Length: 436
Image 1 (cartoon, rainbow, N blue to C red):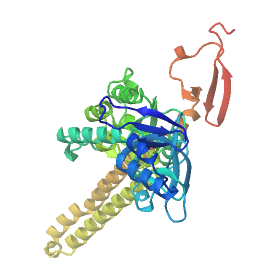
Image 2: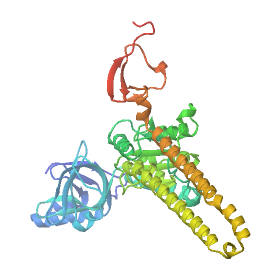
Image 3: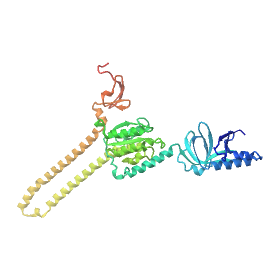
Image 4: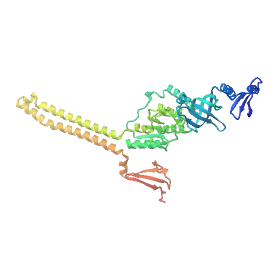
């Protein structure tokens, strides 16, 4: 057996431990001396190693990369933890595996806690895991809990401070990544439900070292925009799902502080419905997904039109009821005692009442026309909010790199731009002011 001395304490009374390169085992020097005098069976030697090794490492935490991860039909999981210099087999029993909240996969870096065990039938040792967490996850959970406690104590989550989301916003500010499915899904939802609303995107990174700072900058910008036209009625802070590390930017105190101080209502839509971040809890409204946030931010135009129609019907019904009531009063007056008095009084009352129905009808007619005019104006104003009506009058939208252009200063000679008309879209190239 090939042995070399791995560790020796300074005191002569302490045993020396040796490491077996062939079997990956530690040995006590006193046992080596004792075993040199006797012949041991394989079982005896193995059980002595088992007793010595398991007593030395009753609890150990190991950080490494998962490889050869296999889940047995029994529910137990077998895997190997490795780094660039060594590896160790590990086992996660079924009852322990049910407590792990994420899927184990090859290449994942984890921290496993458990005990060492020697398995005599194969003559090898393995780590029996009692818990497994993603590397870095424990620190993030602890930081999350501490910040949660701090902000709760400061009143950041109190319901009475949360602002109401406007029912019909004119402008929505979205703070998210300019690429990916999130902004596309939100745009489709808003276009389908309420295309008249104006969308302003503040592009940010949604994970990484500078992500939290960029998200904070976006919230601050919409609260104090450089251009007054960029003031939004509601903000949406959004990103797709991911691990706790991916969502860390939205668990930072600077983001929570920006949302808390925002004078503009904020809808938070970070991750999937099961993901809860600090930003979600501080925001005025939490949405399970970015698409749901888009639905909550704008009304459904179909429902809005139905509401207007119902209001018109209600006003018409009320007006007809007033007309019917007036007619009943007239009939009652005609049949009253006053009409049975002497002829002179009857003639006097008749002269007065002859003009009364006409005047009443005229007043009712004027009131009816006034309400009808108001309804028509409301419908016309709603139609004017459709940007396609503006394009139909000869205007056009200019885009550069899929972003709307609002100033000629951003266009350079030779830039490829898109021009959207009422009935289609054309590409164009920017020329110099002299036409070259």
